Image (cartoon, helix red, strand yellow):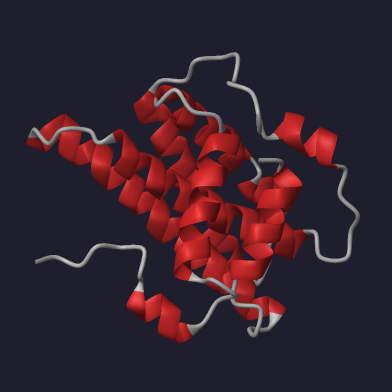
Length: 183
């Protein structure tokens, strides 16, 4: 999946009925929240003896990628995008050459989410430089699971097509037909 295709999926699925200001706040809060869910999987594995489920972590990485990409779209509203340079910048279809240890990558991703949220809430600013490094840390975490960001994006896009066949709706968000209900 190309970055532009994934951005089309994000555009189709994001709640476009919100003003740009509320889209930024929603995406920022959700980026922060989903990063916490990724952290929780690793914490439970490292300290509570839970097995590390790559499919679950990869699904959460997809959710983080969705909100990071939504922020990217908000920050670049009205600008033309050079897809090839973006794909290289964000390690889109390659595995990053450097190995980043998991805990520092998670901590760095959390720092990016926190700084972005602070900028948005306290100053009303969406600074590209504040959240762009998040793509790098996501790529490193995907690599830990032997995946590329394009793999994570494709799986996330498929999940969202099931949940939101046409576009975002509150009803579909509540129903979450892509998630099995507990018996």
